[in-house]
Image 1 (tube, helix red, strand yellow):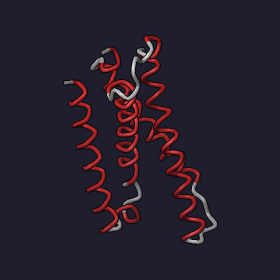
Image 2: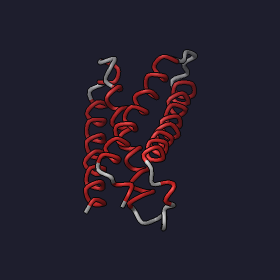
Image 3: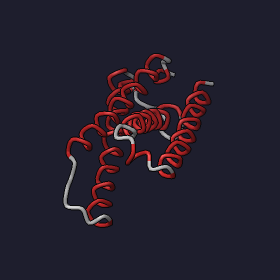
Length: 138
């Protein structure tokens, strides 16, 4: 039952992110509203963190998760690392688009830092949700 609840949250989240992203691109919201990508990165970090936790603890793909991994500290670490890895890859992708497609020679370190911080905050909230529901100790 817990597995299905987390899967439903993941599905609703990714569908919501997809729909909002399509609307944002259609109406140039990322360029018109300077803060628009902040909640999107938070939601993306939440989805990445929760997805990694579901995959490791609940999906059944990793048989016999060691007892030493079934701790709140491990849950937080896994969620944050997942958000950092994929959030970092996304930022590299954005840099590549800026440099090779837009032929821009400027790079906004402050924006990238803010994006990664929001990814991490989203992952921390997903870890909190996972710990609160004791999903890791099944």
